[in-house]
Amino acid sequence: MTDDLVSATGSDFPTALPNTAEYSDDHSAGAHRSGDRVRRGVVSFVRRSPRMNASQQRAMDTLASTYMVDVPRDATSTSVAPEAHLDLPKIFGRTAPLTIEIGTGSGDVLASLASAHPDRDFIGFEVYLPSIASALNKLHAAGATNARVILADAAAGLDHLVVPGQVDEVWTFFADPWHKKRHHKRRIVNPDMARLVASRLRPGGLWRLATDWDDYATWMLEVLSAEPAIEAVNAGPDGFSPRWQERPITRYEKKGLAAGRVVHDLTWRRVEES
Image 1 (cartoon, rainbow, N blue to C red):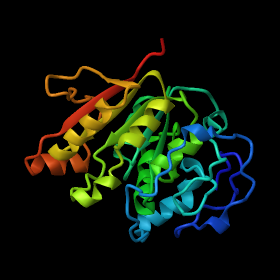
Image 2 (image 1 turned 90 degrees about the vertical axis):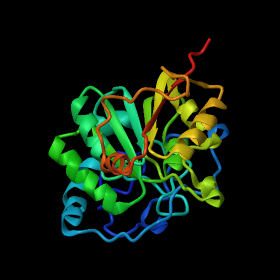
Image 3 (image 1 turned 120 degrees about the vertical axis):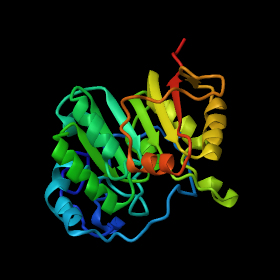
Protein backbone atom coordinates (compact mmCIF):
# COMPACT_ATOMS: atom_id res chain seq x y z
CA MET A 1 0.00 0.00 0.00
CA THR A 2 1.21 3.49 -0.76
CA ASP A 3 2.85 5.45 2.04
CA ASP A 4 1.59 8.78 0.71
CA LEU A 5 0.33 9.64 4.16
CA VAL A 6 2.88 10.41 6.83
CA SER A 7 3.16 7.30 9.06
CA ALA A 8 1.27 4.93 6.73
CA THR A 9 2.37 1.35 7.11
CA GLY A 10 3.56 0.64 3.58
CA SER A 11 1.82 -2.75 3.58
CA ASP A 12 -0.54 -3.99 0.89
CA PHE A 13 -4.07 -2.71 1.29
CA PRO A 14 -6.27 -5.35 2.92
CA THR A 15 -8.93 -7.05 0.83
CA ALA A 16 -11.06 -7.55 3.93
CA LEU A 17 -12.01 -4.84 6.37
CA PRO A 18 -8.90 -3.59 8.17
CA ASN A 19 -8.50 -3.40 11.90
CA THR A 20 -6.52 -1.05 14.06
CA ALA A 21 -3.77 -3.58 14.70
CA GLU A 22 -2.63 -3.25 11.08
CA TYR A 23 -1.53 0.34 11.53
CA SER A 24 1.56 1.79 13.13
CA ASP A 25 1.47 3.85 16.31
CA ASP A 26 3.87 6.37 14.78
CA HIS A 27 1.37 9.06 13.73
CA SER A 28 3.49 12.14 14.41
CA ALA A 29 4.55 14.93 12.03
CA GLY A 30 1.40 16.92 11.41
CA ALA A 31 -0.39 17.74 14.63
CA HIS A 32 -4.00 18.72 14.02
CA ARG A 33 -5.76 21.66 15.65
CA SER A 34 -7.87 20.07 18.35
CA GLY A 35 -10.16 23.10 18.58
CA ASP A 36 -11.49 22.36 15.08
CA ARG A 37 -12.42 18.76 15.75
CA VAL A 38 -15.92 17.38 15.52
CA ARG A 39 -16.77 14.73 18.09
CA ARG A 40 -19.45 12.56 16.50
CA GLY A 41 -20.70 9.53 18.35
CA VAL A 42 -23.09 8.79 15.47
CA VAL A 43 -21.83 8.09 11.96
CA SER A 44 -23.70 8.67 8.71
CA PHE A 45 -23.47 5.09 7.48
CA VAL A 46 -23.96 1.46 8.46
CA ARG A 47 -21.26 -0.96 7.41
CA ARG A 48 -22.37 -3.59 4.90
CA SER A 49 -20.81 -6.83 3.73
CA PRO A 50 -17.38 -6.23 2.19
CA ARG A 51 -17.86 -8.94 -0.46
CA MET A 52 -16.45 -7.95 -3.83
CA ASN A 53 -16.90 -9.40 -7.29
CA ALA A 54 -13.93 -10.59 -9.34
CA SER A 55 -13.43 -7.25 -11.09
CA GLN A 56 -13.51 -5.39 -7.80
CA GLN A 57 -11.05 -7.80 -6.22
CA ARG A 58 -8.64 -7.36 -9.13
CA ALA A 59 -8.93 -3.61 -8.73
CA MET A 60 -8.00 -3.83 -5.07
CA ASP A 61 -5.11 -6.14 -5.87
CA THR A 62 -3.68 -4.09 -8.73
CA LEU A 63 -4.84 -0.48 -8.40
CA ALA A 64 -5.03 0.29 -4.69
CA SER A 65 -1.34 1.12 -4.52
CA THR A 66 -1.86 3.79 -7.18
CA TYR A 67 -5.21 5.32 -6.32
CA MET A 68 -5.65 4.80 -2.58
CA VAL A 69 -4.09 6.56 0.38
CA ASP A 70 -3.61 4.51 3.52
CA VAL A 71 -4.37 6.30 6.77
CA PRO A 72 -3.56 5.46 10.38
CA ARG A 73 -6.67 4.42 12.28
CA ASP A 74 -8.04 5.37 15.66
CA ALA A 75 -10.56 2.82 16.94
CA THR A 76 -12.44 1.47 13.90
CA SER A 77 -11.68 0.52 10.32
CA THR A 78 -13.14 3.78 8.98
CA SER A 79 -11.72 6.04 11.69
CA VAL A 80 -8.68 8.29 11.37
CA ALA A 81 -5.99 8.78 13.99
CA PRO A 82 -6.24 12.34 15.33
CA GLU A 83 -2.53 12.99 14.79
CA ALA A 84 -2.60 11.98 11.12
CA HIS A 85 -2.45 14.44 8.25
CA LEU A 86 -2.18 14.38 4.46
CA ASP A 87 1.07 15.29 2.75
CA LEU A 88 -0.55 16.51 -0.47
CA PRO A 89 2.66 17.42 -2.34
CA LYS A 90 3.94 13.92 -1.64
CA ILE A 91 0.68 12.30 -2.69
CA PHE A 92 0.29 14.18 -5.97
CA GLY A 93 3.84 15.33 -6.64
CA ARG A 94 2.73 18.95 -6.85
CA THR A 95 0.65 21.67 -5.25
CA ALA A 96 -2.71 22.26 -6.95
CA PRO A 97 -6.29 23.28 -6.09
CA LEU A 98 -7.91 20.53 -4.02
CA THR A 99 -11.44 19.12 -4.30
CA ILE A 100 -12.83 16.66 -1.76
CA GLU A 101 -15.83 14.43 -2.43
CA ILE A 102 -17.82 13.22 0.57
CA GLY A 103 -19.15 9.80 -0.36
CA THR A 104 -17.42 8.88 -3.61
CA GLY A 105 -19.51 5.77 -4.13
CA SER A 106 -18.48 3.86 -7.23
CA GLY A 107 -16.54 6.83 -8.55
CA ASP A 108 -18.67 8.14 -11.42
CA VAL A 109 -18.31 11.80 -10.48
CA LEU A 110 -14.73 11.56 -9.27
CA ALA A 111 -13.42 9.78 -12.37
CA SER A 112 -15.30 12.01 -14.80
CA LEU A 113 -14.35 15.35 -13.30
CA ALA A 114 -10.81 14.46 -12.25
CA SER A 115 -10.00 13.42 -15.81
CA ALA A 116 -11.65 16.60 -17.11
CA HIS A 117 -9.56 18.80 -14.80
CA PRO A 118 -5.97 17.52 -14.81
CA ASP A 119 -4.82 20.80 -13.28
CA ARG A 120 -6.68 20.04 -10.03
CA ASP A 121 -6.25 17.36 -7.37
CA PHE A 122 -9.12 15.27 -6.00
CA ILE A 123 -9.67 13.16 -2.90
CA GLY A 124 -12.75 11.04 -2.31
CA PHE A 125 -13.85 9.63 1.04
CA GLU A 126 -15.81 6.37 0.97
CA VAL A 127 -16.57 3.69 3.58
CA TYR A 128 -17.58 0.69 1.44
CA LEU A 129 -14.78 -1.40 -0.04
CA PRO A 130 -16.77 -2.75 -3.01
CA SER A 131 -17.67 0.82 -4.00
CA ILE A 132 -14.05 1.87 -3.62
CA ALA A 133 -12.93 -1.02 -5.80
CA SER A 134 -15.36 0.04 -8.53
CA ALA A 135 -14.10 3.60 -8.21
CA LEU A 136 -10.51 2.42 -8.69
CA ASN A 137 -11.48 0.74 -11.95
CA LYS A 138 -13.14 3.94 -13.18
CA LEU A 139 -10.24 6.16 -12.16
CA HIS A 140 -7.84 3.86 -13.97
CA ALA A 141 -9.99 3.71 -17.10
CA ALA A 142 -10.25 7.51 -17.12
CA GLY A 143 -6.53 8.00 -16.55
CA ALA A 144 -7.35 10.14 -13.51
CA THR A 145 -3.94 10.04 -11.86
CA ASN A 146 -4.82 13.27 -10.06
CA ALA A 147 -7.42 11.52 -7.87
CA ARG A 148 -7.14 9.39 -4.74
CA VAL A 149 -9.65 7.52 -2.59
CA ILE A 150 -9.47 7.12 1.18
CA LEU A 151 -11.33 4.45 3.14
CA ALA A 152 -12.62 6.64 5.97
CA ASP A 153 -15.63 8.34 7.45
CA ALA A 154 -15.66 11.74 5.75
CA ALA A 155 -16.24 13.57 9.02
CA ALA A 156 -13.13 12.02 10.54
CA GLY A 157 -11.17 12.55 7.34
CA LEU A 158 -11.98 16.23 7.10
CA ASP A 159 -11.49 16.68 10.81
CA HIS A 160 -8.06 15.09 11.13
CA LEU A 161 -6.47 14.86 7.68
CA VAL A 162 -7.31 18.28 6.26
CA VAL A 163 -6.20 21.60 7.73
CA PRO A 164 -8.33 24.75 7.80
CA GLY A 165 -8.48 26.70 4.55
CA GLN A 166 -6.91 23.91 2.49
CA VAL A 167 -9.80 22.96 0.20
CA ASP A 168 -11.14 24.69 -2.91
CA GLU A 169 -14.31 22.63 -3.30
CA VAL A 170 -16.25 20.02 -1.34
CA TRP A 171 -18.89 17.84 -3.02
CA THR A 172 -21.76 15.97 -1.37
CA PHE A 173 -23.94 14.39 -4.03
CA PHE A 174 -26.92 12.14 -3.29
CA ALA A 175 -25.99 11.25 0.26
CA ASP A 176 -28.15 8.78 2.16
CA PRO A 177 -31.27 10.76 3.17
CA TRP A 178 -31.99 8.64 6.26
CA HIS A 179 -35.73 9.17 5.95
CA LYS A 180 -36.91 7.99 9.35
CA LYS A 181 -36.98 10.78 11.89
CA ARG A 182 -35.08 8.74 14.45
CA HIS A 183 -32.29 8.36 11.88
CA HIS A 184 -31.98 12.05 11.01
CA LYS A 185 -29.02 12.23 13.38
CA ARG A 186 -27.14 10.08 10.85
CA ARG A 187 -27.47 12.56 8.02
CA ILE A 188 -24.03 13.60 6.83
CA VAL A 189 -25.22 17.17 6.27
CA ASN A 190 -25.71 18.44 9.79
CA PRO A 191 -24.64 21.52 11.76
CA ASP A 192 -21.34 19.98 12.87
CA MET A 193 -20.47 18.97 9.32
CA ALA A 194 -21.43 22.40 7.98
CA ARG A 195 -19.12 24.03 10.49
CA LEU A 196 -16.32 21.58 9.64
CA VAL A 197 -16.65 21.97 5.87
CA ALA A 198 -16.73 25.75 6.20
CA SER A 199 -13.53 25.67 8.22
CA ARG A 200 -11.71 23.52 5.65
CA LEU A 201 -12.72 25.61 2.64
CA ARG A 202 -10.50 28.47 1.61
CA PRO A 203 -12.24 31.88 1.50
CA GLY A 204 -14.37 31.79 -1.64
CA GLY A 205 -14.26 27.98 -1.76
CA LEU A 206 -17.45 26.12 -2.70
CA TRP A 207 -19.55 23.36 -1.20
CA ARG A 208 -21.67 21.71 -3.90
CA LEU A 209 -24.53 19.45 -2.88
CA ALA A 210 -27.37 17.62 -4.60
CA THR A 211 -30.23 15.37 -3.53
CA ASP A 212 -33.39 13.98 -5.08
CA TRP A 213 -35.34 13.88 -1.82
CA ASP A 214 -37.42 16.96 -1.01
CA ASP A 215 -37.26 16.57 2.75
CA TYR A 216 -33.49 16.18 2.74
CA ALA A 217 -33.14 19.16 0.41
CA THR A 218 -35.11 21.29 2.85
CA TRP A 219 -33.06 19.93 5.74
CA MET A 220 -29.78 20.76 3.98
CA LEU A 221 -30.97 24.24 3.12
CA GLU A 222 -31.87 24.89 6.75
CA VAL A 223 -28.55 23.51 8.01
CA LEU A 224 -26.45 25.52 5.57
CA SER A 225 -28.46 28.69 6.14
CA ALA A 226 -27.68 28.47 9.86
CA GLU A 227 -23.90 28.35 9.31
CA PRO A 228 -22.57 31.94 9.32
CA ALA A 229 -19.27 31.10 7.63
CA ILE A 230 -20.90 30.20 4.30
CA GLU A 231 -23.34 31.90 1.93
CA ALA A 232 -25.58 30.73 -0.91
CA VAL A 233 -24.43 31.16 -4.51
CA ASN A 234 -26.90 31.90 -7.32
CA ALA A 235 -29.81 30.78 -5.16
CA GLY A 236 -33.32 31.16 -6.53
CA PRO A 237 -36.39 32.27 -4.57
CA ASP A 238 -36.67 28.76 -3.11
CA GLY A 239 -33.08 28.88 -1.87
CA PHE A 240 -31.74 26.27 -4.29
CA SER A 241 -29.10 26.80 -6.96
CA PRO A 242 -29.16 25.88 -10.65
CA ARG A 243 -27.87 22.43 -11.51
CA TRP A 244 -24.09 22.38 -11.78
CA GLN A 245 -23.72 21.43 -15.42
CA GLU A 246 -20.36 19.72 -14.98
CA ARG A 247 -21.78 17.18 -12.58
CA PRO A 248 -22.34 13.93 -14.48
CA ILE A 249 -25.68 12.21 -14.07
CA THR A 250 -25.06 9.21 -11.85
CA ARG A 251 -27.19 6.09 -11.49
CA TYR A 252 -28.61 7.53 -8.28
CA GLU A 253 -29.78 10.64 -10.08
CA LYS A 254 -31.19 8.57 -12.94
CA LYS A 255 -33.06 6.43 -10.45
CA GLY A 256 -34.53 9.48 -8.76
CA LEU A 257 -35.56 11.09 -12.02
CA ALA A 258 -37.13 7.84 -13.23
CA ALA A 259 -39.17 7.75 -10.03
CA GLY A 260 -40.42 11.27 -10.69
CA ARG A 261 -38.37 12.98 -8.00
CA VAL A 262 -36.92 16.47 -8.42
CA VAL A 263 -33.19 16.93 -8.03
CA HIS A 264 -32.23 19.90 -5.86
CA ASP A 265 -28.80 21.48 -6.13
CA LEU A 266 -27.20 23.70 -3.52
CA THR A 267 -24.03 25.73 -3.93
CA TRP A 268 -22.58 27.51 -0.93
CA ARG A 269 -19.43 29.58 -0.65
CA ARG A 270 -17.00 30.19 2.20
CA VAL A 271 -17.39 33.80 3.23
CA GLU A 272 -14.40 35.95 2.36
CA GLU A 273 -12.42 37.03 5.38
CA SER A 274 -12.71 40.74 6.06
